[in-house]
Image (cartoon, rainbow, N blue to C red; front, side, top):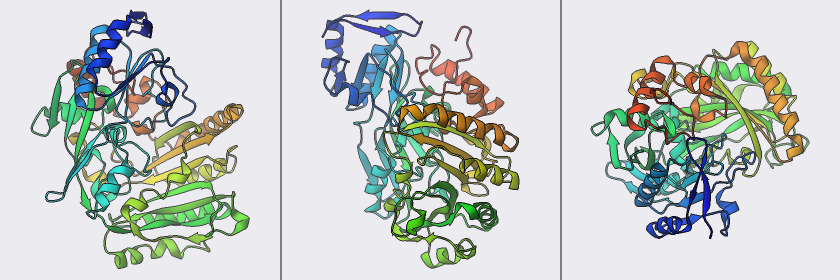
Length: 478
């Protein structure tokens, strides 16, 4: 291994000699990977195949002590630094060109405390892994519509999931976090210890430190009622209007959304619809199953569905049911925003533009979280913004062939322009791409962003943690 040229925060590069790198390697229990090492390409690959960055160093940490060593190493040299949990974020902020990556993906310890219904989970775990272990005890953690999503990134930005209407966001269920701050100190933040840092971490993303583990309140789940009712795209406008009325009646036990997607070649669908655009209204009911069946009657009563696949299943299985819609290895370009309302115009525009998608891998999601545990948390309690908007729209354009990129990006941008009259001035930070500072501010609103910027100046005045949806310190020159 020769000396390394690595990007620094001042826009220049520094040369780190081989002996210094070897000293860091010897200090870690985990692995330190450079471009010359076997496994480098695998280590820099993340969920969004549009991201093709080449870090100078990747530290695959084995524990919190490795994270402390890496943060201190990067801070002392003012290196460009990014932090990777599972690499699922569409913006690709967990990988930086020419910089230093702290990779937490090997840190997957999970410890369940059945007596007090809590779980401590390290930052490299996915929601599927966490709920797999909780299922043994008929418990579940909030957060994650897709099982391959990482616990860390999702929680720090919010944490929507199949229990959001009953138990709130993942961050609403945080009891404490272990975090390595920008000065390389290891602290535990909770309501009673470093409460201002705990407030900022619940919504402020990776701006305030490297969280190495999370302690969650978890909830009884066991067997749930999960699935969806599927209609043809021709029936989508009427089906979505019916679903809108249904959503006004649902109990908190049911978290339910609508999806427009291309039907898989599944035995429960007529063969003529395999690969065809369809709309599905589905979700998870946690509670008494007989009561759940009654709660779904209005949804099931509309029209002539192509399929009704609601059925009892373990919660851990329910969390995997949407995984097929977001496979690994695709090129991704997303747009998202809270809606002012799910108006007739919004529905018609969504259906019209989905029918024009150039890729059969694209999925459009309408999330409904309002008038539930999600919206009842006091606005000031966490850094997460915008609990008052009941509907959120997510357009996830996905394709495999790079030659199709221009067509897919042009389509989603045109779709978004058509949707603008229906959009609120608010966005969920976890769905943001690389969209600039104004959109980051939109994720929090004026007052919360100002408070977050002040806390950033206190905990990370040099903006060491900047490879994220960045909240800039409110200091001169930042």
